[in-house]
Image (cartoon, rainbow, N blue to C red; front, top):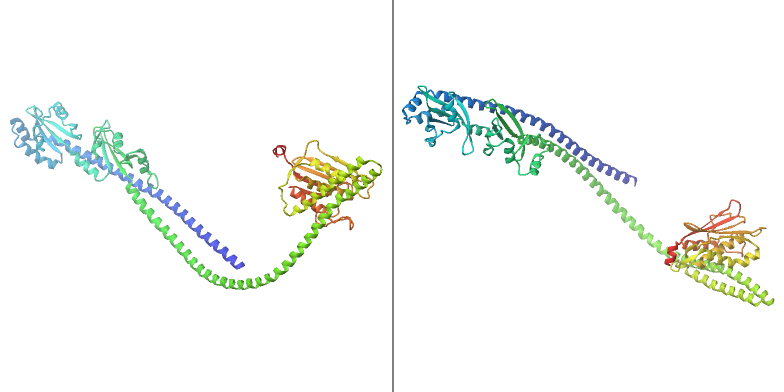
Length: 584
């Protein structure tokens, strides 16, 4: 038994060790993944930030290089003899071919030659021949200035043209204007292939170059708002979809991005780049996936080890089951033998039950005899008194004694009915009872015996009714038994005194006190057939019956010796409230 208990305890301990190990591994995995995610995210983000700054500086350099290269071209073409000759002679048949020979080498978007009236007379884009740019800002500025002028020109398509223009002079007079358009589209295509978004703003913050065509002509805040996530809720979800919140500077297409800005040393321009954290998340998630795989392998090994131990325990359990089956067969044989013994014992039990019935019948007879002795003794006293009264010619007083004898006969009938109802011990016949009336009735029944002994009777009763829920006759029977015991206890005293005290509080308390010798054996006092009287004076059932009645009424009967001599019997019963009495 001890070995099985020890084995079961070890199994429970092993299971707890396994659970604890799983919890610790999971906690370690959470800590490692969290720390790794924080560290790697910070490290890779810093790398992205550094690369973005380097790329931005490269973009600014390329832009300035492109602008400077295109700014030199008008100065060279304004001195080209063939172009000057064409403007003087107004023969432009070879001018377009001449410009086409320069455009690929220069890398400009387009070249245009305008006469003094602003009409396009030669252009690399033949569709623009004949256009009149007399009111165009770049033509007006070139007329007013002898140097190369730069103009940002908004076209009807919404795109911006970056134009360098210079007047062409012949014999000190302006004969035309040469324009060079910067290839903005080529720059934007180069940016779009590397970064997520690039914009260039002028001195007023207006976007003039952008990898997003719809951003041109807008302020940065307006552009981001137009192209950001559809709602603020989606933007918040997309910004927090990773393991940690990345340091978002702005939102591009609903994603958190890194914003970097640099000054372009031209016309107060500024360049801004937006770089997403997608590469950071991919690299961090790759490392985290490797870590998760490692912890998963550890957990798999732990479960494999646990399954091996479970398999070994299963073999052990099968062996123990075989032993238990053998033990069960032995127990079944023993049970069959014991059933035979039980059949033999049933016969003996029937004999004992018959003897118990006879003993109970004898106890019942003794109880009836004890309870009827008191009314019979009172009847004997009343008959003797009635005989004397009749001899003295006092028939009215004799009739009073006969009436009391009739009451005692009625009480004897009630006692026999009560003794028959002991078997059911029910509370169906209970009713509100005034305890004071029960005490007075019991004293009236004991009056002849009290007068014969010249007992000093002290009675203390409340002025108000003291109500309980019970049977009045049975309560009177208890009080009579207590008075009878007190009367027997004061035999041999010169001043026999019995005190009865009734008090009402949370419970109803009734005390019967005498000045006798007290009680020697309090433990066996309420046992049936226990008595200290001489044979023939009593059978020892009074207190046992009284205790049973008090218990049925929901109370208790106790006894103890007084400090100054004598015995005190105390009955405590549940008190019935006045509103309950009224309802009854």
